[in-house]
Image (cartoon, rainbow, N blue to C red):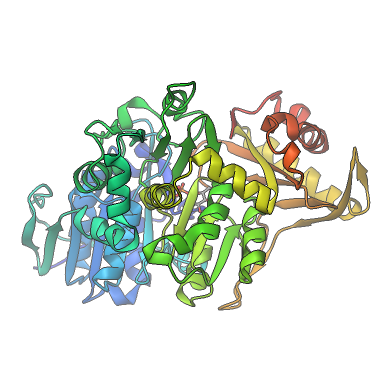
Length: 544
Ligand code: G16
């Protein structure tokens, strides 16, 4: 079948952010908008010609339409085979699993992650390379450069593929295989964790948990793995039906947006364990009875206990965390005698370290935890890891947490988000801080003396690539830190993130309310950045 060559002109706003291109649905629905970006992928990724491409998304509004467009373009561009998740669904970690398992040349994942969905909300697209992970900056830069000069895209005329029917079809000269979205991923999880032990935990009758799928992509995965394979009681998974608008909610598993399950863990009758995942299934939030495990602590605890699970029984080769993530994992790495890498925000920066075998586990404060099993962060994986630990150690979440702090000390940690800030005001605030940086070292801020202040840059130890301008760090003597960054995943205005951390070695002081323990540093951050004067905000929108 002859490809149609469609004339187009560039859009000037197709630069991928922290994780792919995220815009309002209506932006993507403009004629040629999605097509230009997709063609830029095909024009720059030669391996896709004659190769296999994985396609799937988190099921949000416009997912199905976008998949049909991408499939027709893939056929026109000479892709030999497309593997598509049934119903157009693939969680981000499942897509990574499938790209790797079938040794494909890459995948296109449709998601705006934790951002809301619906006709007036967000949509997103990103390309993952053959190793299974998000495209590194060299690839996203090439795709972006191509979008700036694009003048045509290729497609074919063809009827839509039936995405709901598992099986093979042809589209032009391309073979399309609609595959079970869950099976490969579930098998991988079964190979990593002690499913018998977790099964017994559920069977004991003394353990009660809840998993909130937030009406997003994880529902079918969680029902299959937790309820069908591990024997958790039916109803353990709540909000398990994937909906295009996520039920009108904000599919972001944090203390604010997943508040309902926080409530379920409170009080004498609170659940022993609760967890949630996000729009595309790569984030996780972990709760125990009356307690919340910060993502930073979770990474550290998983690393310290990894040897108790079948998949990581050999221990960890190294750990990596994004720069704003607390330094709790660094202490575990030191105790284990392995490297701990500090990378910029964005999962793509872990890829080289994982591929080179330098790290086994990695994580981010933004509710992301993962390992070398795939090349994305993985929400359900983190939940299963915790369940495996609870089954192996016969301790509660709070006991594991408290014991960890006694052994390693506690890194008190919080993140304050100021959302939808005027972009110019946010840039002005960052410029102001930037100007302060050179004078801060040695300066006394309240009870803290500044040890260093810089704009974080990272040199990848594997390929030598350099990423600059990755967030402003103000480090105090003794290890406390304040970090300022602008989010790279929003679609309207700017989001200012302020990350605050303080180390406490004294077990007698491990159980203070977090916002109180960090109160003086929070105040210093607000004043230093002139947050209220510059943004008009006297309080953050989200505190985690
Ligand atoms: C994405 C990236 C993560 C990053 C997060 C936060 O997550 O994959 O690596 O930590 O954004 O980014 P920002 O602080 O720039 O908003 P997700 O879950 O949105 O894909």
